[in-house]
Length: 255
Length: 59
Image 1: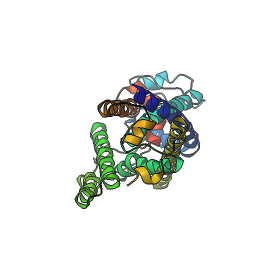
Image 2 (image 1 turned 135 degrees about the horizontal axis):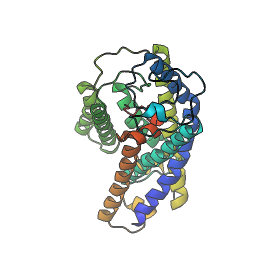
Image 3 (image 1 turned 120 degrees about the vertical axis):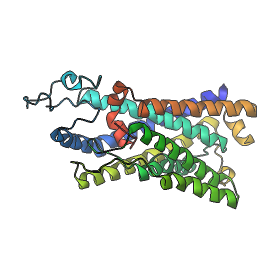
Image 4 (image 1 turned 135 degrees about the vertical axis):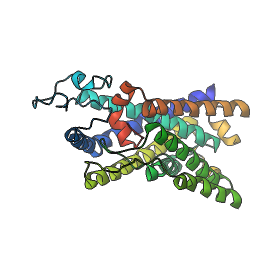
C-alpha cells in the first residue's frame, strides 16, 4: 500500500493548508452574511431550518439579553449544536480541514491516473478543473443558499448535486485526455445534461432574505471556493514535487 | 502511466496501482459525504456554516 500511503500523505498536507486558507476566507467573506441571514430567519418565525441558533427564538422570545452559552433551549428537537462564537468557529475550521483533505484525496487520486500533478502551475490548472466540477457546475442549478431561503427536498438536491459533479468531471476528463471528436461531443452532452434535466426547485421562491444579500453571498462563496481550489492544486503540485524529486513538465501529462 | 508509477509508489503493478488510487478517491468521497452531506443533525449543525459556504445542499 505504498502508493496509497503517499497519496494520503500528500492529500493530508494539501488539504490542511487549503482548508485553513478557506476557513480564514470564510470567516471574513461568507460567515458574516450567514449570520445576517439568520436574523431574517429568526424574524420570519418559520423555523424550518435545522440549525439551532442560540439567540432569542420564537418559542421563548422574552429574553433580549445576550444569548446563553448553551443552545439547549432552542435545540430541543434539533440535536446538539456548537455554541455561537469560538465553538461554532472551531467546528467550521475543523469541517474545512477534514473536507479539504477529502477533496485533496479525490484530486490527488484522479490526477495520478492521468500521470500526476507535476508542479504548482499544473496544480493550478487541476484546481480550476476542481472548481468547475465541485462549485461552478452544481452552483448553476443550485446557487449557494442562505439560511431561511426556500429549497426543494434535501435528498433530491443532494442526488442532483452528486450527479452533476460526476457528469461534469467525466466530461472534462474526456475533453482533456481523449483526443477524439465524438468523445468531445459526448463530453459536452454530459456536462450540459444535468442542466437540461434541471435542479430540484422549491415550490415558491418567496423569502425574507433581500436579493442584494443573497447576491453578495453567491459572489463570496464562488470566489472563496475558486481560491481554495487554486491553493489546493498548487500545494499538491509543490508537495508531490518535493516528494518525488521530479517535476514532470506540463506537456508530458496534459493533452 | 509508467513515469507516474515510478515517481509515486515505486514498483507497483498496474492492477494494484488502480486499486490503491480508487481506494484513496473513495476515502475522499466518503469523508466529504459524511461532513458535507450526512443527515445526522449533530453533524449538520457542527458543519452548518461550512455547508452554506460551500454551497452544499443544506436543510
